[in-house]
Image (tube, rainbow, N blue to C red; front, side, top):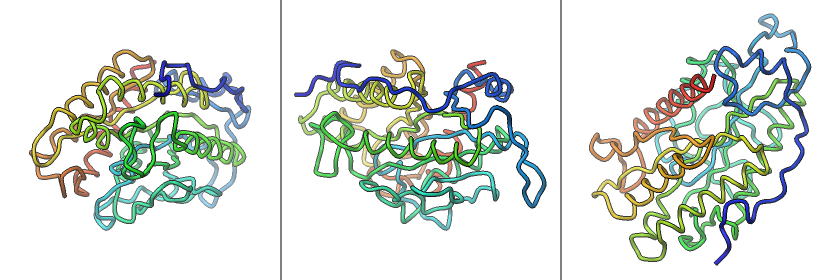
Length: 313
């Protein structure tokens, strides 16, 4: 088995291409910027001309990496997914910024397009409403993927033996470079992580222990922070309960997720709302949510992430 001691397998931290500075701190002071890892694209907030006038605070973009498995991809109904206000929310598609609208994702090898609906338009719309800021993300989730290699079923894993974590970090770095090239002041809000179903099933089947799952998750934190910043916020969207009743494996995964949040700095529980979906009619099958569920979850994650930033003042 691979050594998952946190820090043991991670690459040496890379020097950042852009340095944070006083301008970034001033811009972030109103929402508690200590919770964000800043990359400065310019010494001052630019006043670029647009058809509607000049940008001001909207030159600041809060950036997130979306990763995990199928509920991070989305299995809902795109027609029931909200649309963020024009010019406020963007997805990096590998070469450019596009407006956030379901279906999202699927632009990078190893990821799957949400050909249905996801939580991310609702997340973006609520995030912009609460913060008054632009938001951008890159989606690198893939359905059926495991955290720990032992839980894998052929769809890949986020462990030291898989290639998803490297691909996700590469995609995030490409997105950050593109945003900086566009002269945005980029603030890295962190990773939005929704994963655990595959590992819960493996625990139920006796193929995985909760301790191994937790070790793999903490190793992933170490890897992303080595690549994207030592203080990178990591927001865990807690795994829900199956529609046909909770199991030992699902309980163990949720407990491990809470323990990782408690024991690791800059690691947060973004939402536990999905735990209620089986009892509130927001499940469309055993483990996937309805679009109503995704919309509720996206708004809840946005609210919690915003509160986390405010609390970090």
